Length: 360
Ligand SMILES: Cc1ncc(COP(=O)(O)O)c(C=O)c1O
Image 1 (cartoon, rainbow, N blue to C red):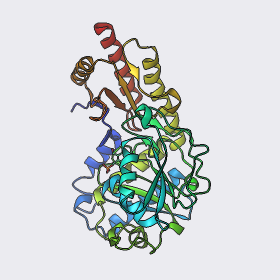
Image 2 (image 1 turned 120 degrees about the vertical axis):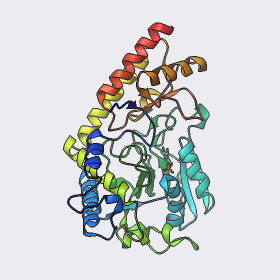
Image 3 (image 1 turned 90 degrees about the vertical axis):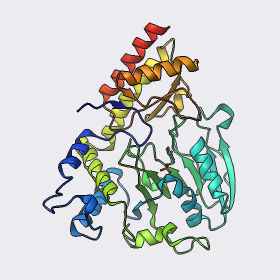
């Protein structure tokens, strides 16, 4: 067996320990004689899996009792619609546009009400996070929406916006569980799990209980109403059961590693190695304003598209995979999620150094 260092932005690298444990349990999960994949979601064994997963997530994120944890489907993109359908009572919402995902979320919300784009970093190709300390938050806004870590552009909100008392809704798909968060500052904090937590197909939404009501926009489908899933403890219909099982294993791995404070330290150490290299390099350049740099997604360029392509090809041959930047921006991007070991980033920077020496 040989494994590569996988810098994919998502689906992405998962802890080897988790993959091995899942492989061991593949044919016979704890004496049930079947795989979790083959098991009824109403069985005792699965009930324990989903309940343990939720309890572990609550412990890791220190989720207050007045928040529900929902395991949903449809990808993060489905939340772009589900959020306005469930929260737009006044049919007005404020969006902060820091990249493609916030832009898409705003466009979707526009189908349901008025969207005010109260800040944007589009003027400099989303290479920074706008100052959100004193924004013109709309008086009648139902919520303020952010994408907290911008997977494509590699920026991260280091401070949450001042929403002037309005509800904050945040997409944390690409920074989920990468560092501690104060859940009580959010109305909804959600993300697709396929970057930092598990296989594609599961979305986790942590929602303040008072926001989960029957008072949704007319015509909202049953499946897109948070209350449906909250009332049924995420078992209204068949959930993405195997995915939830893997998420649960990752939660246990995170707890064993020491929790989110430890992950933050590890992630800072990994990111520093790469950013320090970029800052001194004559060839490679980071594309993000240093103060807004993400710990998870690190875009960089040489400034020469041909050289970028050569780098990506040779890196792949050296076992460093998926370093191509998003198709909308080009260049390179190294995603260094929780499960990427320090050695992976060491291997990447050593390779970059060698490439620079050979090609400068
Ligand atoms: C920050 C962010 N939000 C939303 C999405 C869309 O997620 P999905 O493909 O699960 O709909 C992505 C996907 O890469 C993302 O990075």
